Image (cartoon, rainbow, N blue to C red; front, side):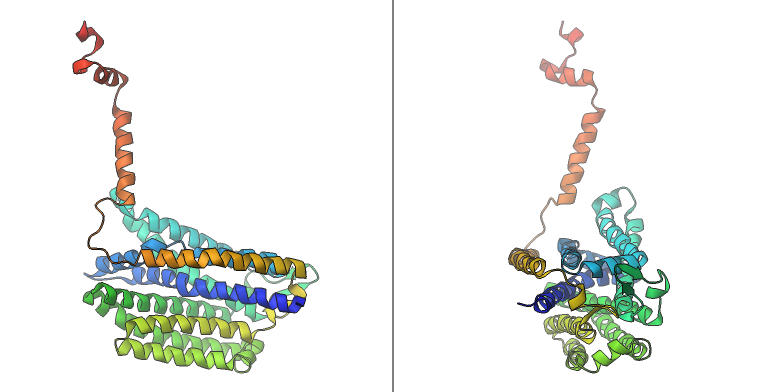
Length: 380
């Protein structure tokens, strides 16, 4: 195969991983958004429902982001260098948000409640869940914005204005809205599966409202693209028109499924809508990877490297996809009762045992080792 064909396959694998991260990881971010907005007497139950849905897989979805980074670095090194250089500030913010979000989700659990820090870590989790997808959306807008230039091996871009354009802000808001729609729709289906009508009444209207707001933001972003990013706009209404219209129609079908009570169908439709949106973005700026200087052909690694990357990626998928599928399935199996001891409670019991051992004096330990617990003098 030609280098261009191999590069196209690698780009398709990267876009597949981006789609998986958006569909799965985006719902995780959206859960944090709804966690932040939880108010009123049902707030605690809402947060418990969100934590229950995210708990088994709250960090597993980051494997797709790692896959994107490694494959881009290997197959399109100049693209990796250009993005990581020009967008160093937003990438750092996104990385910090991902780290704090993951850590906070763990620290606000049973141990966090025990030391009285659960609420503080809960705010960290929620705020990081809002900031991270917003910044990631801005990064996507900057990549398509045409302000990152590469001359030879030199990256030319303004570290601030490149990712703070109106179009980039609109892309960030759209990403935030899309994550909230994914999470609300998934949580609606989850509530139906669990027979929790109270949470169903909470998340169903949020899914419908968030979908409408996100559609409006998407329209604004498209209009801004028409004036600020003509290449992307021409692609959206040209070679990617079928994907663009498909995303609109599937979005309407998702709203219809929610209104008609077909919540599981809505969950599949909103995932398909997300995939169509990302697909439309990729096709719209094809063959550019970073507009306007880096294309599939001039940014690709040698054919031998691309071939090995494709083989390793496909072999890795044979392990990764069944593993993730099993992870999701095993934690969704209904159980009659919850275990009496969780990992958190087991860790706390170990800590308590260690504290008891630390408070035991050497003399007490020697006394316990003698018959009747007597000290040496008492035995004599």
